Amino acid sequence: MADMREPIETGCPDPWQYMHPVMRKNFGMWKYHEHPRPGVLRHVAYSGDEIWTVKVGTQRILDVFTLRTLCDIGERFGDGFVHFTLRSNLEYMVADAAKVEPLIKAVEDAGFIVGGTQNSVTMISHTQGWLHCDIPGTDASGVVKSMMDELIDEFKSTNMPNRVHITTSCCQINCGGQGDIAINIQHTKPPKINHDLVANVCERPTVVARCPVAAIRPALVNGKPSLEVDERKCICCGACYPPCPPMQINDAEHTKLAIWVGGNHSNARGKPTFQKLVAAGIPNNPPRWPEATAIVKRILKAYKEGARDWERVNEWIERIGWPRFFEEVELPFTKYHIDTWRGARASFNASNYIRF
Ligand code: SF4
Ligand code: SF4
Image 1 (tube, rainbow, N blue to C red):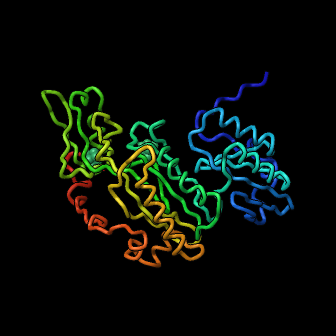
Image 2 (cartoon, helix red, strand yellow):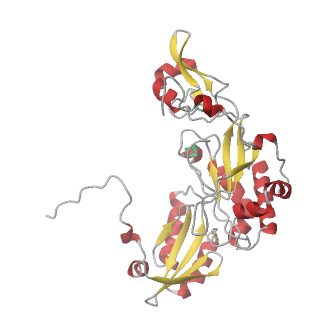
């Protein structure tokens, strides 16, 4: 009997087995690609082979019945190969141009949308939210769903000056990412400590080490080992909450949303650019987050009307200048937009009990 293969516990599975045969055959040998309509790409190889990709918007959290529906469409109308993108979209690959229109019709008849390519608003990148993560201050699924409901026409068309990547982040410290527009959590009060639970739940040295500004100290409270926070130093980042849930920082009133713009990874044309804060203290207002959505739509409208062809959001702002940007999007520019924080000199790497 053949030896059983050792299970592989980590890393990605071998991608070749899932790749469309035409893509496998022409790997690294593509001559050019075209964009015949929103949501569809046509890649042509040096061999003359071609592959058509149809991009479908889906929600991030898919139930098994929806997945079966989507896979069934891929079997019946595609070539039986699908690919999920980083932004939770589905791509069907077909080698025959005649299959593209029937595939799109099947997708739309099932209630999904085709788009998200080239200079569209792509799917908002989606963090885990309440379903999977232990520390979110808002529900990423809800924010993404309610915003994409309002931006659906911009997903299905390609009328933006360039592509627009929007990201969410449901805590202040972890995932999310660089985006032309980023909707991030913003805590505005230090954590509230439940001293009865700290000794049983938290490894206090780990929690102390997590604080980037050394604001946490071990303390005895009511005769029990606990922690205390120097609120003058605390920058309300929430980094102490994951290793110590009794340091609750999520709060219905004081956990807000903030909007940042202009983030972009480096590419062939330029260096990376960092996002800058443009709106803070926005109500974290489920189930539709109307205040945050209204600001995102204002930014997109001004960008669409004001940017030159192929300018990304950061390039547009760089050209017109930040004062004009704030005028165009009708957002107030306040003293809180200016980073005047000098605490790092007195706290980063300067504590006598912790070194980073
Ligand atoms: S952004 Fe924060 S809360 Fe949201 S999934 Fe990532 S780690 Fe969890
Ligand atoms: S919220 Fe951040 S800055 Fe404040 S105590 Fe916790 S880890 Fe330190």
